[in-house]
Image (cartoon, rainbow over all chains, first blue to last red; front, side, top):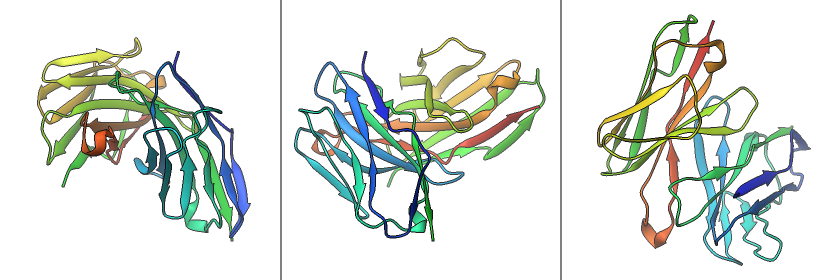
Length: 112
Length: 116
C-alpha cells in the first residue's frame, strides 16, 4: 500500500549546520508531497509542498525537491537555527484519496 | 481566513470515564474533517475522517467514536476511557481541489489527553 518512510531521529545539530532529513515514499499513483512541522505542544503546520515531479517546495529557508525517479522528497536547510528544533513529518496525498499518509516524524534538536 | 479550534487544550480523566473532544472550523464550508492521535514520541495515527454531516469513516477499530452534527463541527467521544487512550489528539480539515489543485491539510492546536 501507499506509505512514507522517514529517517529515524532524533537528529542533533549545532546551530548553522546543514540539515537533511530523508523521506521516501511508495504510492500507486502520482501523489502530492508535503512537509509539516510540529513545534513542542502544538499542532502541525504546513512547511512546504510539491505537486509534481521536479517541483521544488521552499519556505523559511527549507527546501525539498520532488524526485520521481528515486521516489524521494528530502528536506534540506543550509543553516539551521535553534528555533528550528521541532518534529518534521513527511506526507503524501493521492488525488483519488481523502487522506494524507504521514511518515513517523523526525525530531530535530539544534544546539546553540 | 480559515481557522480551526479545539477544546479543551488539556484534559486529565480517570479510566472508565466518558470523553468528548470538540473541533470547529471557521471561514470555510463543506470541509473534510479528520481526527488524528499522536502517542508520546510517535507519529500520527488517523482515527476518523468525515466528508459531510453525519458521514464518518473509521480507520482503526478502537474505543472511540466520532460524530459530525454540523458542517463545521467534529466531535470525538468515548463512553469509557482506557489508559491506552492517552495521547495528543489533533483535528484537521482539508478542502479538495483548492487553489492550484493542491489539497492542503490544516491542523488545529490539539488536545492533550491523559488517562489515569
